Length: 162
Length: 311
Image (tube, rainbow over all chains, first blue to last red; front, top):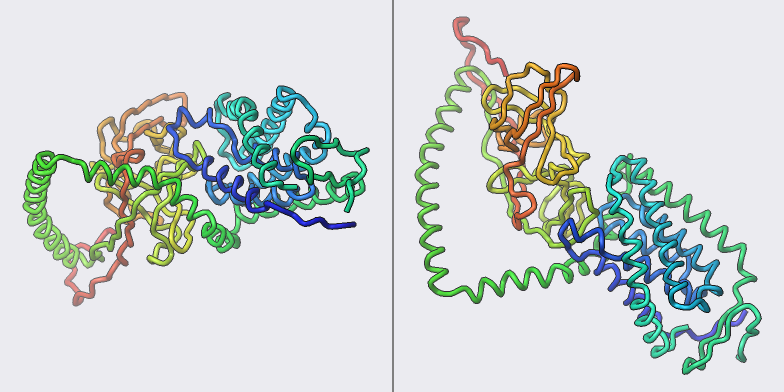
């Protein structure tokens, strides 16, 4: 197995850091449900674009940092993001050649799956939200996907991250 | 190092001449093993974090990584606050200064009376051979404007274990009780508000000493009292204060005002709702309180005609 020189890891971590910060931006309660899940989007992009580099472990770690940032149980979001990373890696060859709208639909399903896992654990510990607006972030993430994909892909090509 | 076979990965055209796709299908099984491992690890961590305190150190360590990001997210709001302060007009500041001086004057006058009352209270308690407490120590902390999990009312403060903050410590503001600390990191801490659905606070009605427990509801401005009997002497407008039971919160701090009492005789308990007196969603500074230890007075043995304390 030959290991090539790897560029640009700093940019991957920078995008993760920016996504974490975006997830912490304080919003009024009514707007919070319409905020996309930036960390999930970023993990999906890197798992699809550079699956050899960003895998389940990185997804899990990002989820753990999200847990610490949001004050949830350690492992709560980590579980969701690890599963999303796993599926993204399994599908990466197909997703990269999808047209943009089909990619967005895949993203919708993946983010909804992450939300479902998070909701499942919340139901067990008793803090589950009672409103249907809980699922709005999946829709918002799907709508924002073209933007995220475009920006990260342009940067990936510019910095030649492989 | 030539190009890898492109039979299992799509070839990439365009400017990215050096992007090569490593064949992944030889590593297929490893992914499944990995995800199973991480799922089990996550479940173990969640159980440990939910039921046992072993992971507090881990969380505190990871918080050191998150802390700079929180500071950055909070920066625009803190900077805007300072900017507003610095461009306030001279007249505006003068008027505000005058107002504060008047408030200070009134408060000091009331405080004189409080000092006399406190001394009298201590003397009376001594007579009744009851214990009395000295004043609580406090520290001001500022909130960081960051978004926490929705529907759980948690806030982040800029004081941590380096400032002697401990887990379970109560927080108050100028108008009432706010919550208690749930996680402590070296330079920051996380607190849960009393309106969080998983927070329960022992209170008593100020008017008649009736005791109950106040829990948070999903409504950020409302709390519910548990297990209040249908014929209990409680009515809207009553002030609820901490009872001090459980040792977490010092007694006597205002908590909420009753807004609604529903006596449904078919239900086992009355439904009582209350609105917190502290300005929970709008406060930027909080006071951390170190409840003073109860000190036992040691008087000489009294003759039998003085009634023993009922405390």
